[in-house]
Image (cartoon, rainbow, N blue to C red):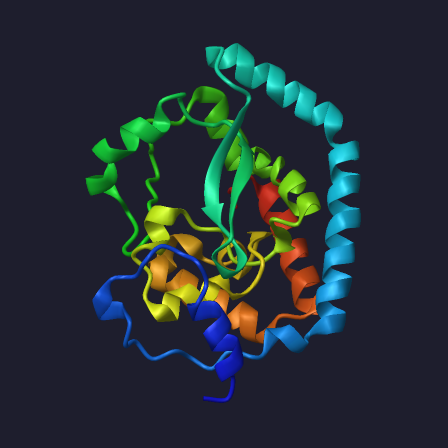
Length: 235
């Protein structure tokens, strides 16, 4: 295979152990990302500048949202959750809390109502979402604290969404290639028809992005994301 060095890097990442029957799945040909020096440098500089500016400019909005969330049910303002990032590295992703305080405990009762096939949970009318939560999710305002993750280097503005451990443990070797790059706040899946493509469709879009990513592609995705936010359809 043309990119054996890169594939070795991805498949040896310290992620949860895969199911045995996934070990022999053929891997697609992914470009050697380690040689994209200029792109990765410029992308990181852009992420730092944009996330820092965003955190400063949006700080008044952060204060308003924090007040509304606290007033809604007196629970914590922020929600953090362990996620799997580039090459299987774990980090805590931050969001404005949009669900009830015991949302994680209630998830087990809802798994049989999952509306997406594969290693991902999605439910349109999730009963765990709070009143203010529905608004900030629809407008994608709940995602704003991830600018801090971008500033730290855990995430990029554009890239595959970071999965949960319980999702990664179900990945095949093919799926694990999503972990080849730094995860992002938005990507091809978020700006496309994500509600109809399912998990495997999301993986295909993520791998398409990884193979063809460029500064122009990132800019196009960011512009489309802004449009989606203003339409209040959520990302």
